Length: 117
Image (cartoon, rainbow, N blue to C red; front, side):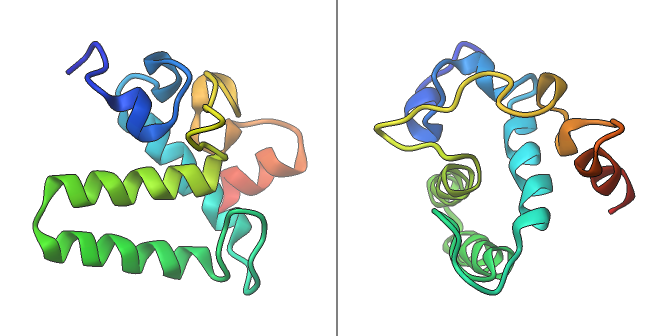
């Protein structure tokens, strides 16, 4: 549903615009950033080896064959990667320009790393 349809609650965004257009931008932004935080020890809301952890969660959700299970796994992933929760919503443009994966090109170290990964 382009007007929202429960996305705000599931993905803990302050408003539907925070997800970008298309809505997958929000997920892509979280995926791109996770590679930069793939450490062998837990950090904040991220478990140890978060790429491996969340890939396993997505595989399990896919095996269940349920759209709801996949959306729940995606929501848990974006919450951990972007800091969303029932108590704290994710705002629009939390990162780069228009939530461009990797914060977009730039002359900072993060901009360079994002563009060369």
